[in-house]
Figure 1 (cartoon, helix red, strand yellow):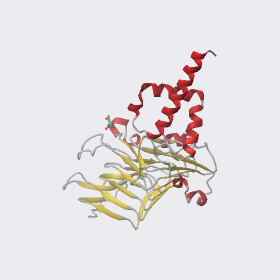
Figure 2 (cartoon, rainbow, N blue to C red):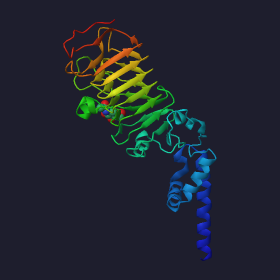
Figure 3 (spheres, rainbow, N blue to C red):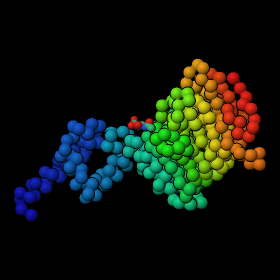
Figure 4 (cartoon, protein in one colour):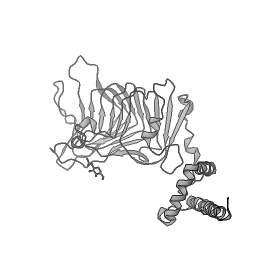
Length: 311
Ligand SMILES: *[C@@H]1O[C@H](CO)[C@@H](O)[C@H](O)[C@H]1NC(C)=O
């Protein structure tokens, strides 16, 4: 190697190292400039980047300058459910993944052993599908106001109410703790067409939700099919905001009606059982009903009952 080349590569290495170290302490990408990004590419391709990144993570540093708090990943659920695989999700580079969907993809298919996905606080803007093979999955957030999954599809944008979900659970034995599910599509005007917007759709059998929140307006929670348990959950919407043909128990939940105006009429449930031969139904035990306006428990009498005004 001749002297010129030697000095050239030495400078390149020195600049890249310096900018890499700096990148730990800067949050603003623009001040680092094009060269730094270029150097980062070289590093990424050489594998050196990963080594530094690993050292940085071990020291609790991330590129955004955030100090990682690893105590977040110590969940009591690991022992409770005898979890063998824990996947972590966080938006500051402190977890293994930065989206819930990427973590779900990493869950082993048809595994008889429970997998736990822990999400740090944050608003995760993504439409998530937990497919039928992702059985025995547990997801845990930091509280339903702190860890939220949000998306904004509507019946019109997704070609049908049931496809407008933010999160859809098709797998059986799914459990969620301390997470908020929200559809951020705007509140449809009374009588408007296509504005239904589902926050969560659940079709997997034997699902349970503890301390979770479900936020939307029309058709918030599609409790579609299977046997489900909702404990200590907050569910809000305008009309038919708990609907579907599941067989579910809602215990100690907070049900909140948020009608679009003083005169608007709210309706909590639209249970879709088609005949008395079916075993499906929604049971509300020790739930609190709040919010404003006139409210019906169930508007459309699916099996011939008359709607009852409850407030
Ligand atoms: C969802 O939000 C995006 C970005 O704000 C917007 O472009 C899109 O039209 C919204 N979709 C619906 C169905 O409202």
